[in-house]
Amino acid sequence: QSVLTQPASVSGSLGQRVTISCTGSSSNVGYSSSVGWYQQFPGTGPRTIIYYDSSRPSGVPDRFSGSKSGSTATLTISGLQAEDEADSCCAEYQSSGSSYTYPQHLR
Image (cartoon, rainbow, N blue to C red):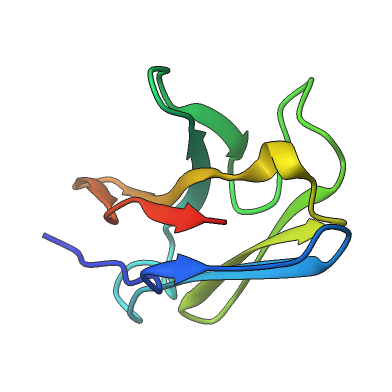
């Protein structure tokens, strides 16, 4: 199974630009796989905030953006808000199945 790696946690100040990285390999993220980002609050199910590397679902604030370069995908929050404190994780999709990282806490 493919492995994706994220830092254990990311901290930021209100209003700050924060980035969260998700690193794979040349055989998944760096090849043909797409990456999605999910946000989860205590007691709720995961919410998709980015799909297909950089697409944002309706209703997700435009301060969230996604990008991918080589084997690394990045979630950027431009202007961190108090309500952004949550567990976040990335997921990679390919024809052979899905691979998920462990949740990462943003605080």
